[in-house]
Image (cartoon, rainbow, N blue to C red):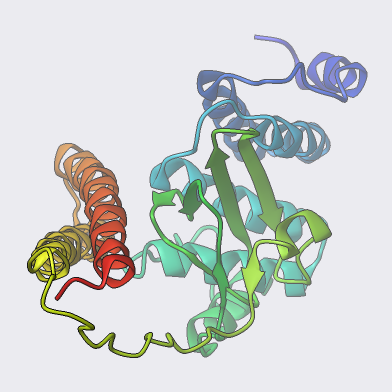
Length: 281
């Protein structure tokens, strides 16, 4: 293994990663950063962490919830080294959001220490209202697919996978989002306006096609709701699951149920729209 001094120098020359960055490389960078901090090599840690943030920005695949939790942990450690209390609280709030049961080890947050005070402040902070994310692709918030709310007032990793542009990653610190992400935000939803009922204009109707389409659309919507319910249940159960295998199963269930729910939701919406357009009730 390279000495911290040599590693710091080599990382300084490799200031920009070769995009796209494989997920395995990102995970190796996370572990290297944690190891450097544990070895009290804080200068090398900060250089490696800065490179890691750039690697995550170029990641070729979405991060898992476990990956993101470690990124938030590193954000807090970097803020501790840099003596950035506000950023430390923001990172700790993100860690608590992902794993509400997590407790900082006493050697890191001894009573009366800066980290302990920041952790207490993060635990007491009220959850701020977020913004809705929109787009035709798949959203990943805190490493969880299908979440479409951007949390406020804390560190957050947002990833968006689209057919046109591939994977885009943002790492926010609780401040205003960049313009590239702001274009996907909705400040407030508008109420759905239903079209007026269309009266039958003659006895030569071709039947009740719209009624059939509407019933089929409602059935698809019901399946979609069930799929999102399963995904939500898996999402809520993930932080409390201590067994790694079961936690990974819950994450896979969340992804699969979210995709299935989205497919049936789109199908149901198309059938209902077709029913309204045909007007053959």
